[in-house]
Amino acid sequence: MDAVDALNETAFWLERELADSFKVQAFRRAAGIIAGLSQEELSARVRDGRLKRTKGIGSRTLEVISQSLGGTVPGYLEDLRRRGAEPLVDGGHKLDAKLRGDLHSHSNWSDGGSPIEAMAAAARILGREYLALTDHSPSLKIANGLNAERLMEQLTVVDEINNEQQSGFQLLAGIEVDILEDGQLDQSAEMLSQLDVVVASVHSKLRSDKRAMTRRMLAAIEDPHTNVLGHCTGRLVTGSRGTRPPSEFDAEKVFASCAEHSVAVEINSRPERQDPPEKLIQLALDAGCLFSIDSDAHAPGQLDFLQYGAERADANGVPADRIVTTWPVDRLLEWLQSKQ
Ligand SMILES: [Zn+2]
Ligand SMILES: [Zn+2]
Image (cartoon, rainbow, N blue to C red; front, side, top):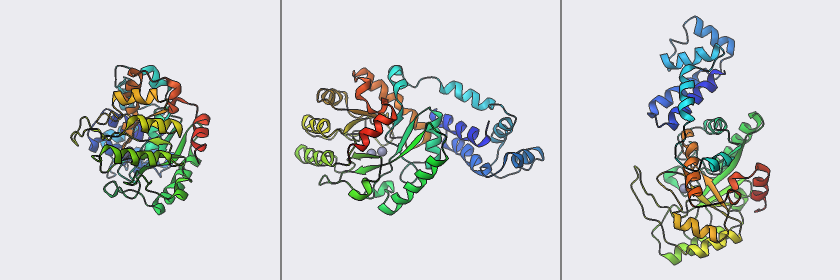
């Protein structure tokens, strides 16, 4: 087994089971340290003890590296894989198995914790066919949103990663674009048209009155670039950031517009969001909307949050075919491209 892959995968499974981040980072750091070394050089350094004396390499990371070089899956990783095969939730397993990818994730280019490469690697470990990288837009300063220049730079990184991938996985270029107060999207049309996926979300003035919020959301849904309406109510139901009630808008109008403009309503899988609430999932179903089950992952281990979203979609009777993330990637891309 490739030692760098083994270290990254170990970090991924630790993160998924919510291990301390210093422990997770130790494996990622070790992966970074040995990344540039050839197999021969690495073996030589293990044999003569140089690797053991290298700063950032501890006994556990050394063990994982040595066992990988020996051609086996490291025992520590094997245990983690076994635990990782256990589901996170009780229901929705069949639907979860049908999910092929994820249209909402963040890297350390905005407020995520890991490099783009680590997010892509984790998506591959989970057997995903694609992952959309959707870092924040400029007005979300607190999340280090990307201006057009940084987004252009990110596109070249996405291209490089796709060129290095074995077939069977694609990193889609995207954005989680802020819906500004007047309903405009927080990035130029020219820039948005270069992306594969546009998730549009409200992040500010969540307590606006119903009419203003409805108008704001409708304008964003009507924008020809919008593919997915992200976490539509903005509510927080649990977690370290505290709770927040859902924002108020005319859900029938908003979902009718989503259906008309072929904008998928996101089922945001984050445990603290669980957005939309059940009642709104039902309304969106009745309105004929498409859905996208997304992780909104800010770290590799969180990509597996899709299980939570699948459980909620299943419990609310959302048919798999109405969920764009169950579609074969060709069909998904055709749908995405039909917008621009
Ligand atoms: Zn968001
Ligand atoms: Zn997000």
